[in-house]
View 1 (cartoon, rainbow, N blue to C red):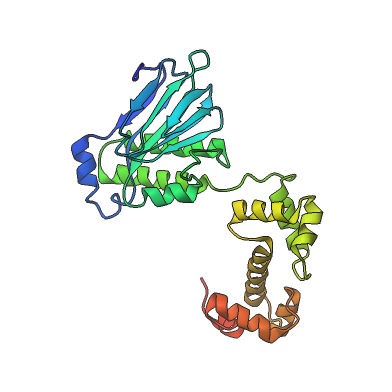
View 2 (view 1 turned 60 degrees about the horizontal axis):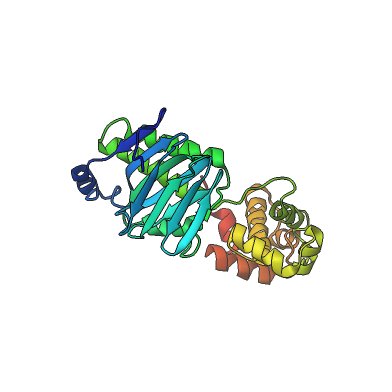
Length: 284
């Protein structure tokens, strides 16, 4: 298998001694980019690592295809897919012989690497996800490569780490289009913020079963639809308290709480301040 040397490629590798030195830095020790690159139409590209890599590997495919084995899983990676292989995991991958993949890739290590990969949506049996925005994902990897390509100073490596952090954090965001189910449900909730909606009401509006809607919300927001409605209600309440002189009772009714005392209790639970204390607290 060809290891490198693809026309138009970009490749940056941090020397081993510099990696060890950087991992003593208080910030770089949290997330450090050790290798990164861009391989266009990488015919013959492949790697076999029976004992895994010391770093977690992210590969974003923008064209073509590749075959991947991660542990016991056999995968096909194609355009729009992002692959994560955790440090120490046995794996092998190779470009398709007739449709070789074009990939952007990053190796990261550090104390927060596993937590960020978890937060991005990768799981023990889920090695491939489709990012919210392929264009943004590629742009962030390009920023990583640009930063590492300047030099090996702390400043450059910190810039690369920031872009890599942003990259991992942004992968989990749901893709939202006007016709998207989650966006339709969000809009419906916003338009009926003061109404006593049920999961069934929201599900009927977007033509899903209540259980399917709950799964969509859990995947996209990390919470159920009614909990999400509560978050939006409190957000709107803060806006009204900050921008108007309306009474707490009026604000409570405007966001769907007929009992102002109950609204005040819920507000305090979330903010550790009563509505009046929040209104009088300094902002900005």
